[in-house]
Amino acid sequence: MSGATTDVAYLTRALKMPRTREVALSLADTARSEGWDYLEFLAKVLSEEVASRETHGGEHRVKAARFPQVKTLDDFDFSHQRSVSRQQIAHLHQLDFLREAKNVIFLGPPGTGKTHLSIALGVQAARRGYRVAFATATEWVLRLSEAKRAGRLSEELERLGRIPLHIPFDPEAASLFFSLVSSRYERSSLIVSSNKSFSAWAEIFGDAVAVAAMVDRLVHHSEVIVLKGESYRLRGKGKEVMAAEQTR
Image (cartoon, rainbow, N blue to C red; front, side):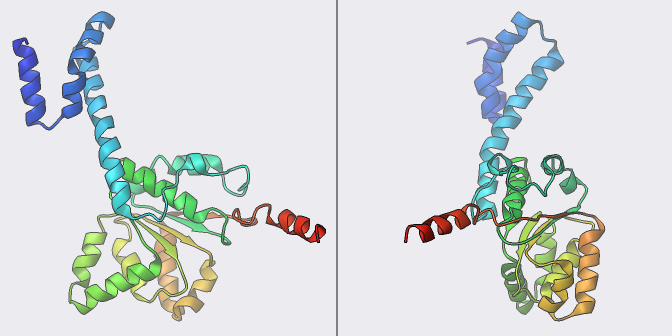
């Protein structure tokens, strides 16, 4: 083993760069044969290390996010859900909205793909180095209620401010949700999916003034995507029922 090889082995261990240690020699051979300059070689080595870390760390972050299922855009049936733009979703998938602290809001009837698209964005974010947390609005409110009772609501809101959140909106959420939205305004991203239109949120919360302020903050810097059509889960069920009736 040459001195340089020994140095690389030591330095990559010290820097905790196992993938670099694995590929450095083979990439050096490729660099010589293909005439790479020093910067090209360095870029190739570092890209291997980054890809490896994204793969391993990303899956850990996906698990930590507690998604109900792991969904990706590859699994989404755009041919069935024609009310959403594939190009728009692909742009969101690049995660610029996270870097700009913007929100993404999916509205539409049950079964139209809101949660699938939300989770797909969350999974992509986790695999690209972001910590993500998934819970229903009710679960977030309960979490904040416990923090408030313990006298650490501000600390909990500050901690959550560093994590992009996905919130499937449901009718049992309480007014603490407004505190969560307000604390993240122009600081961190939210991905929200709801079966209810904005106009129906006042009835759910029972406080039209608070809801108006909350929606104003949510929508100010956001992409609002309205999905339409029949439930994906019920697709084809009508034909099955008709066939069943005909066999009687």
